[in-house]
Image (cartoon, rainbow, N blue to C red; front, side, top):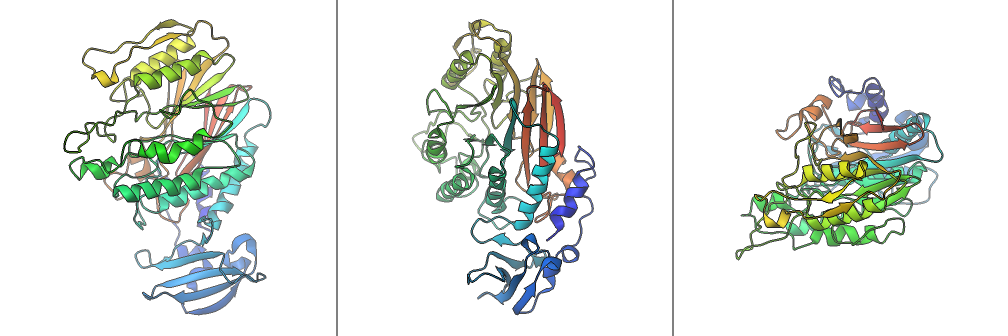
Length: 465
């Protein structure tokens, strides 16, 4: 399908999401292979939009339920197994996009991402202190074949995001949390996390896996009297061991999801804003609903302080699922978001002190951390990356640039949970606005951050450090 190339031209025009993607082309007009509805074998080539314009054998067949399928095999190959497959969707009235049988990626998306990377390269410089990090957030993988909302497409988005690993432009990749929707049974949620982990982790570039507020499977628990469907530390045990084994990543402990990575003079630090105690009552019910209770706690804060105290000559970017403060400067977490921001301000001002909590804060979330940043030289927290809000935003408070990234999860315009930002995108399956991802360039020489988005994301956001 050529839909991806078509829609990319539309999103080039403006940065805001309003009034974009209002007119969607009919798939049959842009995908010549849609017309093959009769069982049989056909030869197709460049005119049909084949991968790299090569000649393929197209096989049309029906499964045991009578559903039509198409399979593409390279005409010159002796391999009997097809390279790309897809099936007809009655709800959409067309075939879905071809997916690679092995990687799960759509070749149209790979071509689209190649163009995206070329665009990034044209607007960034290579060399010292020009650092690129790919960012994805809120994939909300769910065990459902949905064509207009969360579903299996969440795993597809992660697979396709990982295609960027091999482009040679990245120093780091990050998932900002809400890997799963958290609404399936516990054993399904565990399986989903495992599949996402394997699709995301990389041998080509370092990666960081952040925990989101849906990743404890609490949406399912909310509908089952808050009985815990995950045992203690399930997300952590599935996702973090491989992450912490990377030589390029550094950490104080492996307990809280805090780690840091250095690229030239830029230091990235991960933060866990779903830092809650796992407490069950006598009936196996959770004391804290992770989906609703966003927080950072004393032990994690202590690790962040220790890393910051050893950060001389570094320009620092913190990354978490949720934003600790909102654009008004108020606490955006249930507990300690504002305190975390004030700690970062104290770091930038080279101060020494002690953190305190109000008496009305539950004991599990009280802070009593000492910090001393007076010996740190030539260092500054310049930015904070986060997802969670399912929209784009940015605001600068006390010299720190907060940058929010849109959700990759498909949010169709007719769902109650769909944010206004995503309604304006009119997101549709198998169109370029189905997903969202980013490459962020931090250029210390030019004193700027550029956020380049693909899919339902601003093409380019330019922010000064």
